[in-house]
Image (cartoon, rainbow, N blue to C red; front, side, top):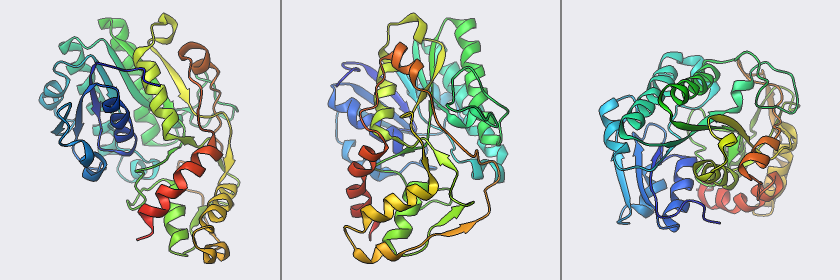
Length: 328
């Protein structure tokens, strides 16, 4: 399925996990792609395969610099804004930098896009915006109070997007990602996501740490679904789908304990000794939301979004990549 074709697209954070998966698909569909990344969390190996592609251009720079953003948006029809400093724990430790990147950086992208006449911007929002809301499933128009600086920054993005749409006639669509996983997700950083972190530990036959008793749950979302949502949001002609936000998830939840059990079982196919690894349990992390489950009805009805990979499908497809890339 190729929804974006023959376009000039800027992908901010394009060397990151999600951004590089988006770029891979865009280049297969005859698009011209500019990647803006400062490699704070993105990796050069994620885009190494595209460096000699005449349809691909890398701008190494920071969204915190307005002139860099202006350079990056030149000639773009579409901006897919994936650049951010992720991680709730990181933002708890260093709220200033999270705010500079996620809020000031986002504002720079908006201003540069406005001045360059870019009509459609799709930006990565976050399920963390639901905060302390206990409602399940999470529905777009009912949110709680943010529980971390990261959540504040992503909610502020939504507020700025709404203001720019109203003031300047721009078309902005936010995608609230729910716990995305898949190939190219980094397991080695201090703030690695839970799935690659568990996989890395299991392959090493080390006990991964579960924060809490394992009953917290997440709506894990395979990256292919996120790529689809970006394409649909970038190309929709439905006026009701523009200048709003959508959940991007599968509409199913998995407990952290069940996640561990599934990963251990699948990795045991490659190395039987993994089957005997047990987790250790620790304190709940500050800012963690207990349960996350998305309603995807809005995205289905207005964008035509339909997950091609539920959690089990995504894990089955990703497990070989994890094994090949994390075992050394």
